[in-house]
Image (tube, rainbow, N blue to C red; front, side):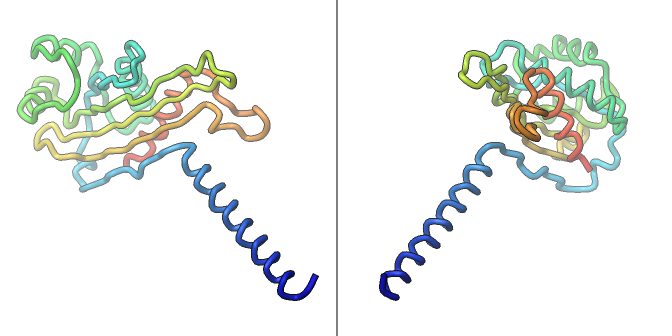
Length: 198
């Protein structure tokens, strides 16, 4: 093989290697999504007590919003960062205010909640995906959650973050470390979200 031909072959190999490397990076990046948390101000440092509302459920899985909210209450309590209002009192408030669905809560209603329950902030959010992974050839649960903390006095956004994970994202080697339960995965996803609160 002459020098020019060899140079063309080596150049093609380098280009192919680079292309494969870039494709691999894109595939890895596309497996999970963990958005950087929003920390707009120091208002969060003044927060002592919070209330967690049922999350808006877009997943299609029945009661996913309530399940995620309950996990949030538990994990937030375990973290020791804030005092957490009893979920029963939150539900009672929603009944009294005739709040049938959870989405964007109005500022005035947020202030009423803050005063009535003596909370400094409210956690609201959305469950985008909540799937136990059953039925597939390689079953693995998937959970995607977006959460926000809002000052109940001013309506200011204190914190916001999004986390999406699959059970096999936690594999260390072979199948070791894989999470097969959607409940356990939800706990992991929520804990990772809470850990971003500064």
